Image (cartoon, rainbow, N blue to C red; front, side, top):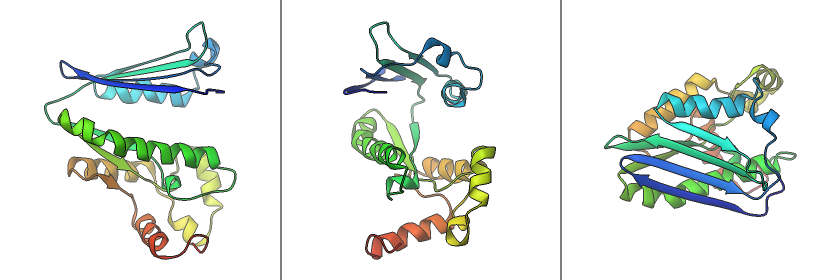
Length: 193
């Protein structure tokens, strides 16, 4: 995106949580915002709509990108942030992905106290490889050994993540093999796992 600055603003007024993220990068072209097969953008809108919220994604004339997420909250609000197991590891050729997921994890932990003051519980999910689409499914099918055992289906990740959120857990690593791998990573020196 070419951004050198990102601003985050969060507010809770009249039971509505609003998160605004703005950057000073090149922005998103209007034709890209309107693409029918832009699953990431469409997914943002669909997920917000499932809880009665909405998303506004735009690129102002002066450049940059603005994302505004507005979600009505119940008395006992809950937020599930989906990071990735990539937040804990360093994968060649995935530096931006891993760094972004690590940022999301730390951002979530940093805003958790503020959200708690507003009556909102936040859970962070750290799924490993997930068969999110046909291209990823084919790539995951090429994995072998333990790496193959880490792969999960989206429904299983969602079920385990939502269960953790509703039980009030601060974080969850979906999948038995992913939990074992994380445990191993905490006791074995870097580079050996």
